[in-house]
Image (cartoon, rainbow, N blue to C red; front, side, top):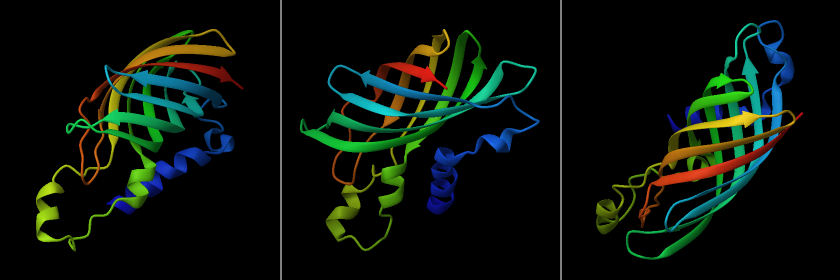
Length: 179
């Protein structure tokens, strides 16, 4: 399962424009920076988004990949800082004004996720919340070609083998330039 998800999500960064010929408009490519926060945590990223819409509709999908830096506080009160490689899919209505739903995961954690059963006895009880980091969210924005601005809200699962994030809700702002 892990390898299947890794193959599917890592391929999002390499979607060729010619794969949409005849079915979709030429894909839009956006470079973006984004920042999301809650009361204690922050995630700042830069990335690329490739959008595909049907020729006769504004409904479509956008595939995103972003490299970022996260700083979160754990339930134990410690501060954790780490790199993220969020990759996801947005589904929605994309026009001058757009709304979408999204789902994604952290490819770095997916690539190095350790699910072996060779931990010692004590670690098995602390390992209950070591899920691959992921998110689900909604957003909306304005596209004034070539610039886009959007706001979004996400629920994130962020943890590791030894800690779990204190907060899971984030609100963010993304600014993009289209090509």
